[in-house]
Length: 349
Image: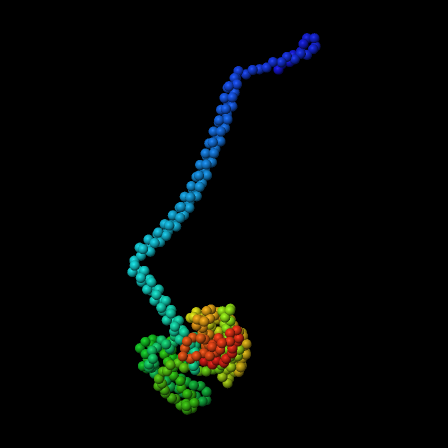
């Protein structure tokens, strides 16, 4: 639209229209083309997104198959490795493992035999496997002489020789006494000192005998079975010594429990001042699974403390292992479940 002013001061407006040289058909064609291009762009975008998600899904499946394939290849390599081993080698390995298991079973059977109570003595764990390593028969002879000096109140022992020892003996040596030795014992000999004459030397040639043990006192033990909890309560009540000389030392008890040849963790009592009758009154709990079938052995050891360590006083055992000597204490416990039953047991060294 265009405007102009007249000469007489009056303003006049003139209007006109501009017509573009495009027909309606062309306009609608351009609009249709734009719409078609827009739709084509949307279709292309949709195809690209479909390809992208298809690629991601395919990659995940391939990764899973690759992992599975790797595991399968590892299993195949393991099978190939096993198959590539010589059958003889595998047989030898199995036989060696079986022999080790059999050896362990024999050792456990030997342990059971030596831990079984055998009146009037009890075998110490420190010497398990000592006497059974030797067959029955002569153990040899030991020649020695003794001399007692009344003025110095000393006894002199001179070991001369050992003869007729078993053929399987290696590097023998002599102790006067050593309760803590873990070497294999060939035999021992004992001599009554009251038969010695003052200031005279006597020579002996004694036959070696199987080691014997001495009674050194008694210990009062209580047992209580707790079937619901599958436990056994062991009580150390009192210790009575047979020694006339009581030294001022502290003593304590150690309890070891073996269930079906399996050793549980041991437990110890508190220290008590040693006296003619030492009172402990302490109880300890141990596991006892499968009450009706379990084979249980309880080893009770009394120790006294020294400045250099500890010294074994004596030991005794309680249990339900099948032996020719019946343990009435265990039977009484089984007859009175959940109730403590106490009994005196001899201590041996």
